[in-house]
Image (tube, rainbow, N blue to C red; front, side):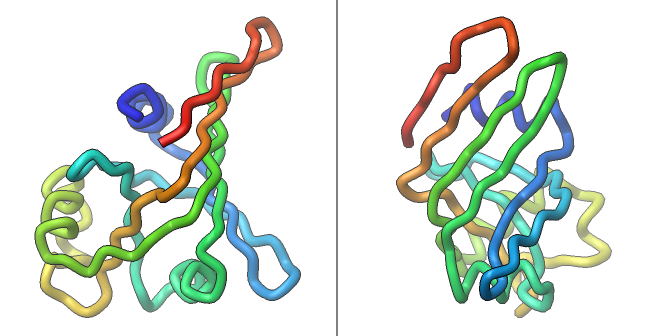
Length: 130
């Protein structure tokens, strides 16, 4: 999981795919954290992506850097604990104008039953489960 985290951090932007009914939705994200041995992302509960994940928590993300890409699929689980939110926001102080660990909007989610696949056009794929 640390290798997945490091790739996402170094890529800086990844794209998260969810579904809304039968319509796929993809958008850029940049937050990623490891807390209590789980891989977390962050958003706001007021956003459409949050509502999509509550209706169907299966998601996939994809990042690309230096000719390699990473896909992570799994179930995203909301963690409403202040400690999890605070840990994420401590690593992204630029979000402090929009989010707070004790507000009703900040949402952190961790991957459950995740499969991460590193791939490129020149190397065989490598899969990690966590």
